[in-house]
Length: 236
Image 1: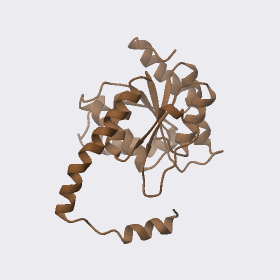
Image 2: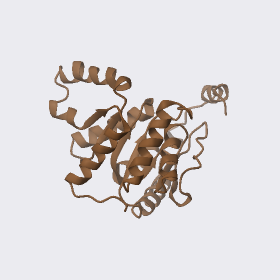
Image 3: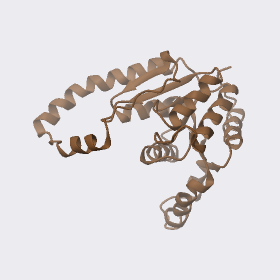
């Protein structure tokens, strides 16, 4: 489905009536339950993994694609599994790195109007499909022991700030969040300092929830140091 077809589909969208919404909600409960159970049963068997996020639009040959592949490869060689959103771009690159390294390559794919197709580097028994973003995000939060965040768009920012918020409010066990490429993220970080922190909407300690690095080696070291500090063991 191309961009014009997606735009036409959205233009033709008709809002549901309140009765339709209520009926749909009732049936959705069963689908939600099945996604949660399937996710729990599959991911609980895999062991400690690091989630890698970034743009689905990143092309092979792009520097961010290469970075994602390298960081996933190095983390896998350290014994960690890799979890991605299962699609193309940075997600594909990270799954590829894990696959080449001979490690665990997990994909949490999501059904979208433009049909996100799962990439071919996910282990066949570790591909889980979701209809709901919130159940998919639950799996990332529950079964990731670290986040690697590469340049991306709204979806990447959504995952990033969800994790930061849950750690800030003690609703999620603390784990390392590593943002790669200082040049890309610097404008956002400056705004956080100049607006959120200066106006008292966050505290200084909240800025320690995430770390900003420039190289894959630095990113891997942050994850390794966390595991060493808390005596956690990867998938050796």
